[in-house]
Length: 111
Image (cartoon, rainbow, N blue to C red):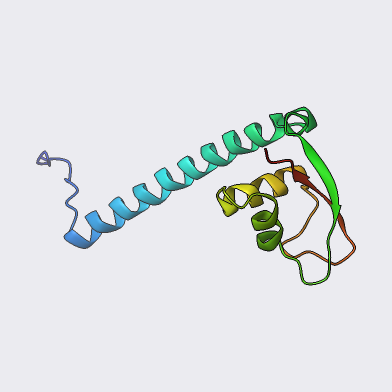
């Protein structure tokens, strides 16, 4: 006659619980990052040239030695320099991190 055995129970060690929690955290973080980038990409794709046309702008030619910082400070001395730089980047999505002399860029008109 066979004796009935109870099913084995799973017992996690402290290390096993830590591995399980870290794995769950990685999955949750990855899901959040994927969702955030999807929404961020959707928001970026809905931003169009029509949004940029709402900002009055003028075209300037970058002079030797000028940077985004120096241009932003010159055109809007009373405003946050970083905000003006952000507007310049929005108006010129093709522009890189540095400016080359002779490049034509759009800058916001500041009242």
